[in-house]
Amino acid sequence: MLIAIDVGNTNTVFALFAGDDQKGQWRAETRIGRTADEYAVWLHQLMAMAGLDMADISACVCSTVVPQSTFHLRNLARRHFKTEPVIVDSSSVPGVPVRIPKPAEVGADRLVNAVGAHIRYGGPLIIVDSGTATTFDVIGADGGFEGGIIAPGINLSMQALHDAAARLPRIAIERPAKIVGQDTVGAMQSGVFWGYIGLIEGLIKRIKAELDDRPKIVATGGIASLFEGATEAIDHFDPDLTIRGLTEIYRRVKADS
Image 1 (cartoon, rainbow, N blue to C red):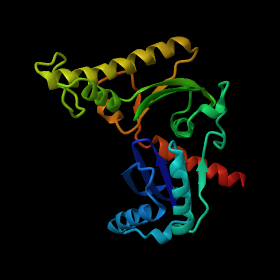
Image 2: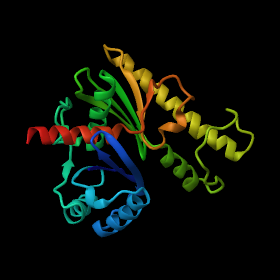
Image 3: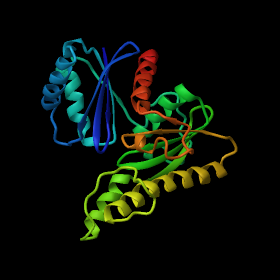
Image 4: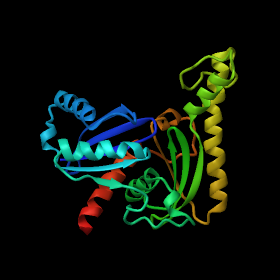
């Protein structure tokens, strides 16, 4: 079986595949100091609960935006999966031309998303990834990376409100019942939720104005599901975009080796 590992700034996702069939998916908080053995114990327990055996893992592909975690994940694959992992970085994503002046500056996660979206939806595309940061990536008709936008994520904005204003509480992200809040929490929820809808809709409109083609809009990321049904700017909500991209990259790498 193949295990695909997507390390984000906030969470790390492990997804297990037998061929094209996903057998399980688990999520953990990203911690730089978490060792290979700690990952193994955590994963072994979750797999056992699902009736799966870690000894059946025979291949591993990993993408990370946290470079410090690479050492531990490589050791996890070598020591506990008995395999050499495919570590995806911005220079090792086959089939994705990067058309910006400094290709090395593109995060591997954004290129992995480009692969996952292009094989499912074709192109051109705008990918909106809502996580620690909110990114808007433009993907050409051929799957090439054309550039994008990086904005603060919704959780960062909420944390900034709480940290900078002594009387503003820490609140949960949810769609408020009314646009105009009747109390502090309602006002904050409306500002954060509908403010981000405005950000998404406004930036998509401006990106489209610069493009010759009419792109499909695909949203992914841990927070994207909150916006489903709240805006018509998104054509597809796809939480498995990155994992799909990772498995496709693994296939391409192995086909070329």
